[in-house]
Length: 286
Image 1 (tube, rainbow, N blue to C red):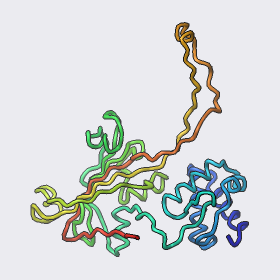
Image 2: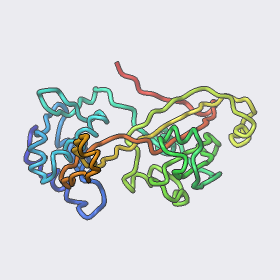
Image 3: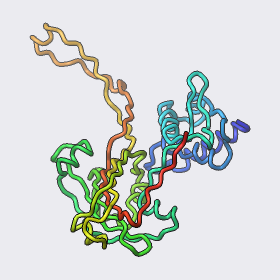
Image 4: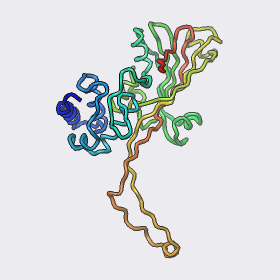
């Protein structure tokens, strides 16, 4: 790295800039590193300072730095080499296809968009939604159902179902769902998407302004958010004598905790695109 001191100064400024906000600390570190790369302050193949050094220089825990780096590795921006360290990925290195909303996808194609809301509500999940979101039948979900237009033509019927803990009131979404999620630090970090061919039924065909039985692309997407949670560590010793005496368990040290990061599904989308208007584009690498 050409100027480690300048990189650390930039990272410190970005980390403390939103000190009063509710943005998680690891996200601030992550964005600071990403901005340094985008601005050219850190170049391709540059090695980042060690995790321990970054934590000490920024005044944060090593777990915070580790989570920030791990997120950038997932995005393909950084690469880790065992025994060597963490490096800025080559621009030629394959990166996962970015997770984009309908509006963002159309914008990159130079297409204007608008929507008609068909339903915004909160309720109990269906069995399919329970399975997709890994929730119990009594947990609330928020539903967004709308007809999406591209250059004035109906393009897509979109059903989005989110955890009510992520989107408590679906009526706050006026246009872009992902813009709202991004503003509230709840934007999904990755998704698994399946695209298949399907024929439009009478209801879908009517809304999409196509004949019944027209070819559609059916998209099923499950989106995930990385969530950090502190779990208490319990040291349990089971003996016959203790069980017989029914003695209370020993007190737990409040410091005995571990931070676990896991991706959990927060959004389940089913969308139907007109086959005569929509092209599914993928970037492939060797």
